[in-house]
Amino acid sequence: MFSDSFSELSSILAMQGFAGLSLFSVFLLMALGLAIIFGQMGVINMAHGEFMILGAYVTYICSHIFENYLTSLFGIYFFVALIVAFLVTAAMGMLLEWLMIRHLYARPLDTLLATWGLSLILQQLYRSVFGAREVGVTLPDWLMGSISLTDMIEIPVNGLFVLFLTAIVTAALWFIVYRSAFGRQLRAVVLNRPMAGAVGINTALVDRLTFGLGCGIAGIAGCAFTMIGSTGPTAGQLYIVDTFLVVVFGGAGTIIGTIASAFSIAQAQSIMEFFMSGSTAKVLTLLAVVIILMIRPKGLFSIKVRH
Image (cartoon, rainbow, N blue to C red; front, side, top):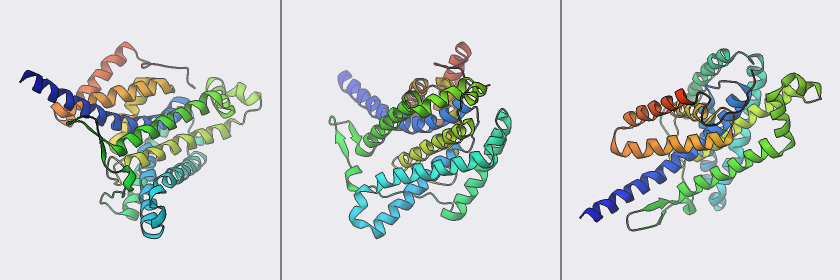
């Protein structure tokens, strides 16, 4: 009897652990974009969740176009949606940086208020265009079903795909930041903006491309989000606090810290939510993070950021 109970508990923890990996994927994709914008640029983008939802709505539109007009190609629509979502959200991010953000550098509280107002505008725009009700996408057949590990443990195929997608995006971002010419320019601007400009780096262009990259990754997060949840005008606000928590806890501007933080917070919330209410799990997770930040104010990992 004890062995049966232990086996059942182990299965529950394994299932919740994998559910935590799905949540970790969305947290990480959201946080990677925000780590670029907040950690590297010092901009508090409260509209980051709305960029994620924009990516989700782009995926929803692509789903309907392929389902109704390109039926023979429906199996690959998600890959098209990933590219389109990234391009649309990145372009919108660069436009936002040019119109508003570039005038607010070194004024973080102003960026917070301005982007918070933008988030409300975008929510109303989504509500006007797509309606107040939540919408969902139709997944292709190859993303349906699950893989049975044991009699009691099944892993959804779409969850595995989201995890694989997150790994690819994380590796690509690491390469861009630490191995590409643009990444060297980005890190030079972060460390010493006047000197970077003096040696010929177009710091304004670097800022615009960096903001666009962060927003584009949020668009990819929106694509991933459509596989685990429904898309609504205010859905992004449900994740923005957790995303900031991930970035601050991991250490602003560090990819390794963001990964470790997203994994810790997602797993803690997922496992605790099975044994208690969701709000209680969030409170306990937040309390644990606050205690750790009191010991390590700069987060798990930290680098020098722009002042």
